[in-house]
Every structure is written in C-alpha cells, then in structure tokens.
Length: 157
Image (cartoon, rainbow, N blue to C red; front, top):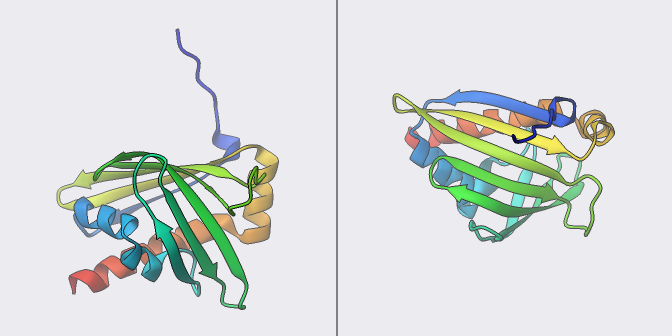
C-alpha cells in the first residue's frame, strides 16, 4: 500500500479556463519568445536567457519588476507530456535555495478551451507563508494566469 502526503498547507494553486486550444496554451508556456511577453505578475517584464523544455532542461529568465528590481529565476524541467503536463522545480538560481518550490501545470482540453491548473508546493508551510506575504505569491499567481489569458486573446485576435 502506497503512502500519500497532504501538501495543502505548503501549496499555492490557481485554476483558469482559457478560451484557447491547449496546444496553443502549451506552446506559449514553452517557447521563449512567447513566455517573455506574459510571464509573471502585472507590471513585470522578462528577459529569457535560456530555455530547453526537456526533462532536466533549464529555463533561466530575469523578471524585471515595475520598481526596477531584477528577480533571477531558474526552472529545471522534470516531466513534459505535450500538451498535457509540465512539472518543474523553480528557484532563484542559487544552489540549495531555501525558497525553491515544485510546480505542476496541467493543461486539460474542455471542448476546445483549456482548463489550466497550476500548483506550487514549497518545502515548508513557513516558506510558503513567507513567499505569500513578502512577494504576494497568491495574487501573483492569479495575475500570472490573467496575463497568460490576455496574451492568448491577443494571439487569436
């Protein structure tokens, strides 16, 4: 019999129904020229330095905050099931970053639209709470998916 663990107190998650086919949603999530245009909360811009979407592949990007602060990001892809699933670890690029978290993104087809579910799991409840409070991660994830939705609308206009 397998074991399960309850990660709810260590998670931040969001769900959004996007009016776009999941192949397109997956594409704009996994191609650097698209990712740079919508990634992150409102007011942020991005420079994508590297992006290899494959198990073990890296994505390195810098999020430029509206106040001029730069936030380095490193994503290490773990599992890619095109166009259904992405799993990756996400951190600042510092080895053994205590703020590192694991992300699962599901892309589910719903009659030509995409139900996107995003879940970030932190190492502890304290790190999750700190990230939510200091960086506004809960609202940030909501804005992140809203920016994705807006970008998809522009692409299909």
